[in-house]
Image 1 (cartoon, rainbow, N blue to C red):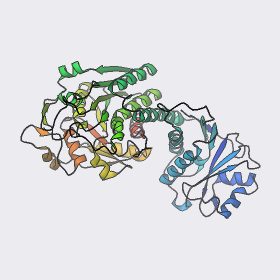
Image 2: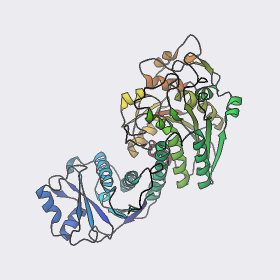
Image 3: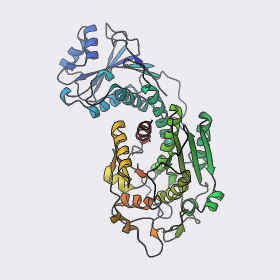
Amino acid sequence: MLEFKRITQRPNEVAASLVIVGVFEERMLTSAAAELDAASGGVLKRLMESGDVSGRVGSTALLHHISGLSAPRVLVVGLGEQRRFDAPRFLRATRDAHKALKGLPIETASSYLTEVEVPKKDLDWKLLQSALAADYAAYKYTATLKAKPERIELKSVAFSAAGDGPILERASAVATGVRLARELGNLPPNICNPAYLAEQAHALARRHPEVAVTIVERDEMQTLGMGALLAVAQGSENPPKLVVMDYKGAAGKPVVLVGKGITFDTGGIDIKPAAGMEEMKFDMCGAAAVFGVIEAAAALKLPLHIVGITPAAENMPDGRSYRPSDVITTMAGHQVEILNTDAEGRLILCDALTYAQRFEPTTLIDIATLTGACVVALGSHASGLMSRDDDLANELLAAGEQSHDRAWRLPLWEDYQSQLDTGFADFANIGGKYAGAITAGCFLSRFTDGQRWAHLDIAGSAWDSGRKGTATGRPVAMLMQWLCAMV
């Protein structure tokens, strides 16, 4: 975890391992870059004239031992055309800058990108986004890798900013939550199973006494009538867990977050293709996000009451597995026909959403890597958002825009509900070939009557796909932005 701080020293004076400054295209220097250039006898201008430093947005050039400077290294980051510079270009430049630091033998870095004017964004926004970008780039998964010799690594990042406001403390808390969510998502499923998530909840409570943990076991699930969650779990040797984390930062009725925790998804009897199945360890990233939010909220001591619920199970093929055409009874009393065992996430969520209502939530939000259809519709840049409550939807969309952890609203019209019709139960667990992300939301909506509820489908945004892809920790930043706006 990086340490964040503010500095007021000028870039030619600061004694960090590395200084970050930005330049625009057309050989235009930012004020910090101009100061470095003046102190070094025009080095930056000469490099831009020769083409060694381009100014293209996101481009980086690492310079060593420039005379006249206290820092032994300077990272010059391209900001693109000055007239077109905006928030997305600031974010890209900041993220690419911190990516370029990875692997360098440095302990401290000082960034002057926060001095660059960003239209419609204030200093706090620049500090928060810069700090989160720095920590995101510095994260390194090591849990199941062979130990390597210790090396010099980045420990702290300072940002040019006057004042002493609390925004960097907030950044540190959110970064801690994002890291936890990423780590849980990245762990292999032979480690991160339902019991492990329960253990991690207890570990979180030990770190934060304001968090109380309850684990609902299989026997109690049967007593409660959680037939959907139990059906999904019955093919696995690892028993299901319903993990409840109650953060009492304030009195009153809570916000309740419910995160899908399928710790590995084979698809069950409707088994998935082998290619890419290894990525199904990420099918618990909704649960990981809930852990991350509770961690961040508790670290920040938000004056809110937040309950995080994660139904955790494995979806495995076995002689005891639930089957296509089975009819199961949910905790809410609905009879559901199973038309596809790979549509399991909505089944564990529906019982968790019913359980959540005992807390009388002011707002109820579920987060799930729910449908491939959402990935087809939105790709990896936006999470899918569905809600019957326009105010809540707008709040979450605004939080996503502010945090750049964005969502896009999909319709939840009554017209789609008929796709769940079946002649053998109250409704089916899938709605057919078309509008799969929406009909999944329609399914969940039947368990949230009377609730101020929203559904976030993070199937495309929760991890970077591919053999070297890792969990992203989304939408922790969006949800923390939304929660912080309440206080």
